[in-house]
Image 1 (cartoon, rainbow, N blue to C red):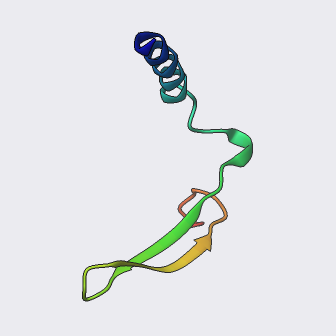
Image 2: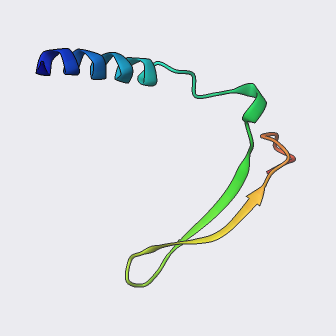
Length: 58
């Protein structure tokens, strides 16, 4: 039973690992600024949508 469950999980995992990360219709570029507080925690400072990945956009 365990080996049958593992085969199913392994197959699902392989499909997930091999999927395409880029989907042309939903690609958005954003500029994110993250700072570090004195106690070491990260802090999100800003999120700015960008017009694309060109040099002019950045």
